[in-house]
Image (cartoon, rainbow, N blue to C red):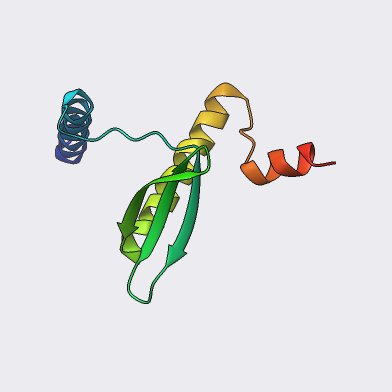
Amino acid sequence: MSEEKNIHNNQETQLNEQVQTAMASPAVPKIYANGYIIGQTVSDSFILLQQNGHPISILNLSFTAAKSLSIGLKNMIEQLESDTGQSIMTTDLIKSKTQQ
């Protein structure tokens, strides 16, 4: 196995361990949201998370972190759709199909 492959595997193992630790920790808040509002200031971006139309949390991100997050989420959804053969509908599509 090449040194580069070992480094990648070690990084992936560390990330998995961080996720498992965070998921198991009662000190790390777990938030469920089924809606959001996105916005920006002159210096950063924000996501106002909602649950059933009510605000529950605000996530502030630098523009760099927001762009990286958007790419990561897009890739994750594309992989899920590829793996399952199912296209996940967006809220805009659901609204357009149900408001006739």
